[in-house]
Structure formats: C-alpha cells, structure tokens
Image (cartoon, rainbow, N blue to C red):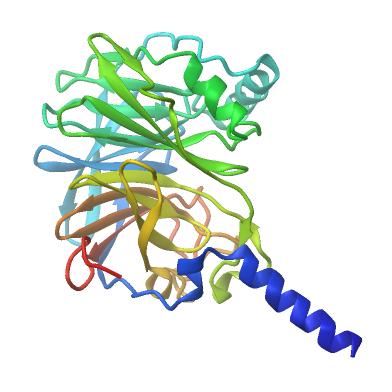
Length: 331
C-alpha cells in the first residue's frame, strides 16, 4: 500500500511540475538542416539574429566582435566584425553578485558575457550583457553604445524573484523592427519576461517592466532523465506581434502573448535534438539562441567546447521548418 501511495504521489507531483500545455503531446518541428560553425574562436555561440541579408552570431566569451555567418558546403563560416564597447553603465546589480561575475570572467573570458542578439529594421544589432544587465547597440558601421536603461529595471526584476542568483540573469533579448520596444528574458530561478519602451534617448517601463514571472520545476524529455528541474528561458524572439521563447530544459519553442507573456502554444524539437548522435552528456539541453521567421526557426547550440554523441565539438546551428499552418496556427 505504501508503494502504491508513493507512486501516486510521484505522479501527482510530476503533473503539478508541468504547465498545462506540457501535459499534452506537442507537434514536433521538422529539422531541415544542421550545420557546424567554423571560425568562432571563442566558441560558445550564445545568440543568433538574421540582420539584413545574413545570419549573425555572438559568443559569450568574446567582448569585441560579432560574427557574420556564410553557408558553404554544409558548414557555416564565421567572419568576425570587430567593435569597441564602452564601459558599461551601472545596472543596479548588487556588489556581491557583480564580484562573482567578475571573478568568473577572469577564469573563462568574456567580461561582458553577451547572451543574446537581436536587430531592428535599420540594421542595428542589440547585444544583451548578462554580466551587466545591459544592452549594447552596435550600429551597421560597427559603433557600440549602451542603451540608457532605467535603474528600476533590475530592481523590479529582483523584487519579483528574478536575477537573484549567479549565472541566472538576463539570457535573451528581442527588439521590434522600429527599435522602439525591447523585451528581455530572465533565465531561471525564477524565469520571466520584461518589456521596455523607448522615449527619445532613454528607455522606460510603461506601467511596470515585468510581464511574466514563473518559478517551479518541470520534467525534461525522457532522454534527459526523470529529475524535475527549474523552468528556464534560453532566448526570446519576436515575430508578427508575438513573442517566442526558447525553453532549453524541455526542448521546445513557445508562442506567447505580447502584452502578458502568457503561453499560447508550444512546439517540440526534442526528437531531432536528442538523438544519440546529437546529445551531450549534460542532463539538460544546450540550445542557447533563437531566431524565428515566417518560414521557420534558427536555433544555435552552445556546446561549451564539449563533444556530443557523434564527436562533434563545434557550435551547431539548426534550421527547423515552421509548423503546419504556420506559427500563428491555433492549438
């Protein structure tokens, strides 16, 4: 009887750990192409964006360059575009957390720790610095300048339970084509979405920065084990007035309401990502970067220099087809 009760309790706990949409089978996205990236000296691909006529990438281990990717013979060749970032402004992160981040940068490189990339219709690139909770704008000419974000941004995020832990800060950025609205994704413990609006030369929170905050745990796909882990966001993208979040643990892309961040529908890429050949030994996913367009999604894999099942050690870019009926299809 005790064994039966324990089993029923485990089932109930697992169900509670999952959001409602995760309890239903998700449509699997079709993998169209898989290409390793050659030429990213620091590796650690952490952001992707289609800007102008090319796909661009950023590494969280290099503070002075973006990479323009050119496809050739099944490989993405990365060509560096150098820029100079001014000293970052004070974001309001507490001293102790900033010191831990600084010490970590001495060991692994990448003092700015760029974790996201987006671009507007004018060709400006927006790089999210996890280490400094700031956004660097790089113009088409390669000039870097920090956005004037409000100090209340970090304060509101921390008051909501986000940005409290080392290596669990802002992880994704998305900007609208006009360059007037900016969304940030907080990674985990707790994860969330925030929005800012441009007012002349500065950015403001209109009615509050925080759109969504989520805590708790959920189950990964079976290939990654049966241990519930904390919910996460690895990146955020914008398409046709909807937000799309890359959810690394559960290996899925979710469409969310622009105004609230509420989830509308999710699609899985677990079947393609977690084959024996593509899987890494770590008990969580390695998908770090997301860009969504009408035809499909680009996902960048940050392997941290580790080999996956087939021995590949280079960063990977996957191209998935849009789901049947398009990204706006009803559940």
